[in-house]
Length: 126
Image (cartoon, rainbow, N blue to C red; front, side, top):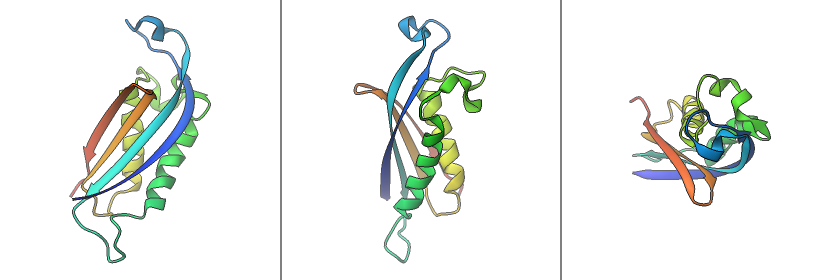
């Protein structure tokens, strides 16, 4: 199994609703997003997938979050903008752009700080 990964960063604010202590107040993070895709075969050019395509897809969604209040954005309406939810939104958005490329899985990890992160992994349809 081959794996390719890219990293992106964005700054954003949010607040959590519920029993989240200080995180119930508006606060911000410097998010680090790690995205990787895996697949069993290389293309004729020796790549799993063009890394530029993966970077562009990730940067597009992350760019739409940069310097925003996540709670104001459509993907987060009606839910807490937790690291898990941010990871799922990014994962699903990028996954839609990478369909039909022979990939098996995609994994997105979202770091809210240097010591706190959440991740999601999904499988591409065969």
